Length: 230
Image 1 (cartoon, rainbow, N blue to C red):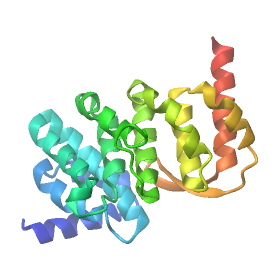
Image 2 (tube, helix red, strand yellow; image 1 turned 90 degrees about the horizontal axis):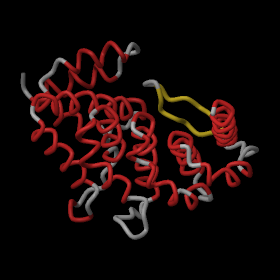
Image 3 (spheres, rainbow, N blue to C red; image 1 turned 60 degrees about the horizontal axis):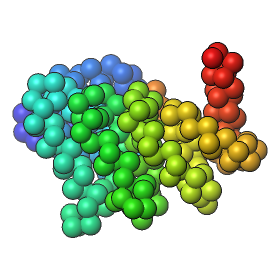
C-alpha cells in the first residue's frame, strides 16, 4: 500500500466513533509504516483527530519497541527533533505523543522521561512556547498516570504553571500533581477550587470538558482519601 493510501486509511480510522476498535486495526499495521502518516496527522485541523493520532502513535510505537527497540528509539528521537529550534518546525503533538508512548512502554520511559521532564525545568530544556507547554504538561500527566515515579521529579517545577494565566496550564498541572501525589502543592490547589474556567481534557480516548476548580477539588479529595487509607 502506498504512503498516500495508507495515510487516508489511518485518517479514516482516527475518525471512527468506536475508536477503541479502530486502535486495534491501527495496531495491526506495521509500526514503521504507520509512524510516518501519524506524524503528519498530529497537525490535523480537527482536534479529536489530533488527539486520536497521539493515542495511535502510542499504540504503534510501543508495539514497535517490543519488536524492534532501536526503530522505536528512532521515532522518539524524531519527536524530540521536532521540538528542537533547529528543526524549523513547531513540534505540535510531539510531547503528547512522547508521553503516550512512554505510558505504554517501560523501557522507552526509562530512557526518555528525563528529557520530557526537562521541558518544564528552567535549568533544563525549558520550552518557551505556551502551546507546546500545554503539550508537555499533558504528556507528563499521561506518563504519570501509569508511571508516577518517572514524573515525580517534575513536582517542584509545577507551581509556576498552577499560577499561569493559561487555564490549560493550570488544569494539566493539576492532573500531574494528582498522579504523582505532590502534596506540597496542596495550598495552591485550595485557592483554585473555585476556578470556574472550563477546559477540555483528553482522557479515555475522548475530549471531556471540566472546570479547573473541579480538577483541583478532585485532587484534594484524592489526597484526603489516600491519607485515610494509610
